[in-house]
Length: 387
Ligand code: FES
Ligand SMILES: [Fe+2]
Image (cartoon, rainbow, N blue to C red; front, side, top):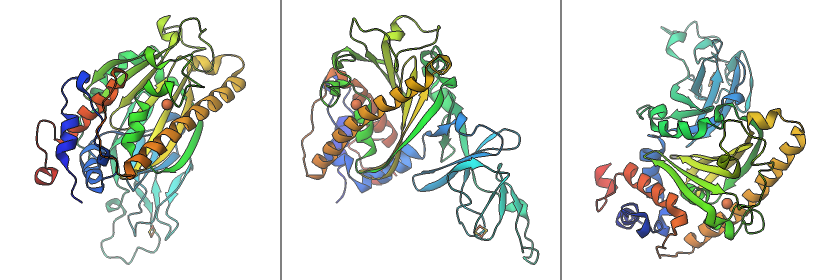
């Protein structure tokens, strides 16, 4: 069925947050819209792959698939970070999987081997192939940038610099020393049967603390004390304030950097760098969702947990680390139940467009971003004719 862009354009084009509405339900399960999102949102944008500490030494590599494209992030002999295709330039077998350290990435099929910078270092039994020159067969390299410890890729190579897109975020996160937070756990939630936009919708509002998180977060971080912070064309921030009377305790709010203001010790910062960098952080912790779109209504989901330099340096690390991982995973499970239920509703054929609360302003910001990237704001859109 052809996707009706006019309903999506009506949501994305709402000009003030007081009038904000949800996306039309069909936007969470349309193959046609997903194809447009791949071309216009994901390939043109910056996608997070890993943290720099996940490729700690020369020779480190870290494999990840994005939109069906097998990639490997490497640190080569000169310590330069690269983002390479994992497809061998002989007959396309994947040259590696997983993460580790190696002098070369050797394809398991016919044993061509590639340096960590992507050059073809060895290719057995190719002497009789006329004109064959190893220089002509490096692994394909993709454009990347590092922002605050995140290695990010731009698949089409045409995006405006990430440093520029996220520039206004720098002063917000610098006091936390985000760059030096370190990964302490990686969790894998497998294939999840809901749309990437349902994940973002859920991530970017604390309104639902009063629902799924009423037994975990709502007392201390009530929905009503959340508010939208700085916004830009490529990011939206939100703060989740602590209710009065609670101490700034582990595992979220302590120990933290001396550079933080008293106010920052009593709240968490939640932000999205569009389209997919989703971060929740506070003085002691940070976690980020690796939402890997697989198709309309389908993602693969990982959640990586990090601790701040202050939290890593303080006594009792192992106990605080365990407490942090358990607390985040328990809360995350509550979110997954909500996402599952929303996607089930969408699949059941609901048609109504809902209204949004002021606590969901980041969703309005997200839909404005989506509308801009898809090129449908202010138009009765027909992407087929503009593609
Ligand atoms: S496919 Fe890699 S060596 Fe043949
Ligand atoms: Fe949640």
